[in-house]
Amino acid sequence: MKICRFNKSRVGLVEGDEVIDVTDALDLLPQVRYPLPRHDPMIALLDRLMPAFAAASRNGERRKITEVSLESPVANPGKLVAAPVNYVKHLEEAREQKELHQNNAAQIRVIHETGLFLKATSSLIGPSDPVTLRFPDRRSDHEIELAVIIGRRADRVAAKDALEHVAGYAIGLDMTVRGAEERSMRKSVDSYSVLGPWLVTADEIPDPSQLDFELQVDGVTRQKANTRDLVLSVPELIEMASRFYTLEVGDVIFTGTPEGVGQVLPGNRLHAWIDKIGSMEVQIN
Image (cartoon, rainbow, N blue to C red):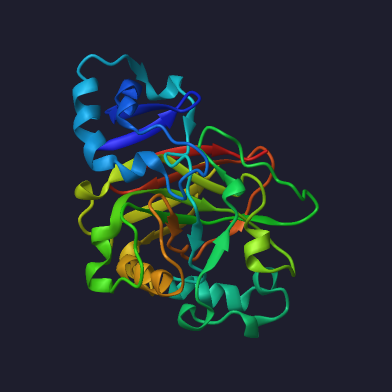
């Protein structure tokens, strides 16, 4: 099932080139009071909502995908967890290019030593919103990544059990402004975390380790790889993350980007595609 959010938090099912409005099914969600939950309520009840979405889709209003404004499929992630240099060839290019390592190649270490980092949730947007370059005098780069949405609370989960905690997958863009600041700060700029175009439920992607993906800038391919090239696989990333902090329902893991990262400029248009998920277009302002 492909589940999207669109047009100011309406919820839809994606079928072909159409979005079917199933927002009425959200009546199943409990009303919440302060203090608010630390997880995403829709993702938490996804197992119950999926049959309700299917039922609502029989009479739901249909619209062309091109006619709606797509938002992040996860409204309230508690954390955005990200994996640095999780493809060998990207590790090599990061060490070779001073624009990427800021004249300190020694700081580019393997992921087993570096660990993971967090991005501010305030940086999250959907594909219909533009990425706005906050520092036009500095270089900002694109990074396409498979994004994993947590569906069950995960605390010190072993890799062999990790996929049982996944709700679904999406395309992630981990945008980066280059500079000497900490990685998490440079990647937490407003609009620098793009998630979309929808959430594909885990049952449709039983093996996330065999997915081709590609990113184009103005029609020119910049990044092209397969998730089999990940240094740490999706289950291993969940294991590593959950050793240090509990993953709550709705948390998002950006799994890392391959080689080919490059600068974006105002006016560029990004086309991101991942097998079994789909594609999205993102404007750079």
